[in-house]
Length: 178
Image 1: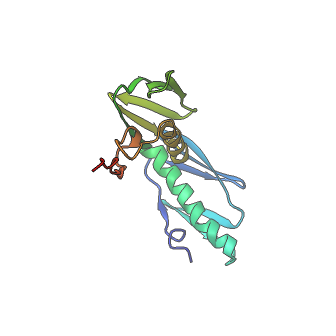
Image 2 (image 1 turned 60 degrees about the horizontal axis):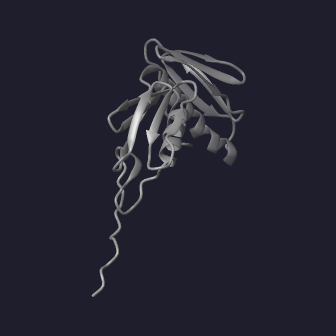
Image 3 (image 1 turned 45 degrees about the vertical axis):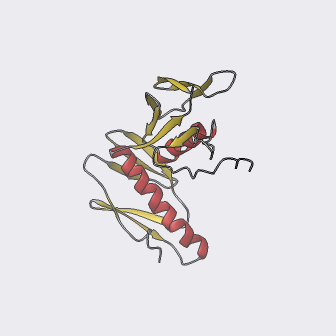
């Protein structure tokens, strides 16, 4: 049996879960999320826990079992605490402005780069740091990856946009003539 799938999910106070035929709705203090139901799994609310089981032992069912539980757990965490990713801009002449739904960056190109966040994701700026936050873990990660891809960090000086906890492995420059 799946090690992740067999673990029950505790439902915090203030979170309501509605299990339907095609989708599971998770509502909490920060908002509401909808998780699609996989046909190979069954989801039941038992007291203050959610239990995900699978219908048979086929390989496809086993694969969906852990995924269904992980998606539900992310939804429960999202509507209670939310998720956030922090990005850092490094480089001479690089600038950052804005916040809320859109930011504008000077990244060494001939034009400023503007980024508009999708619905449900908030962008906040602090000097040369961008914080991407929201209740949907998948959207937060996607937005952070899209912002990072605008100017990936290079290995010689480390200039570019990187995650705060990311380590850039540096390369040695050119060796001088002897």
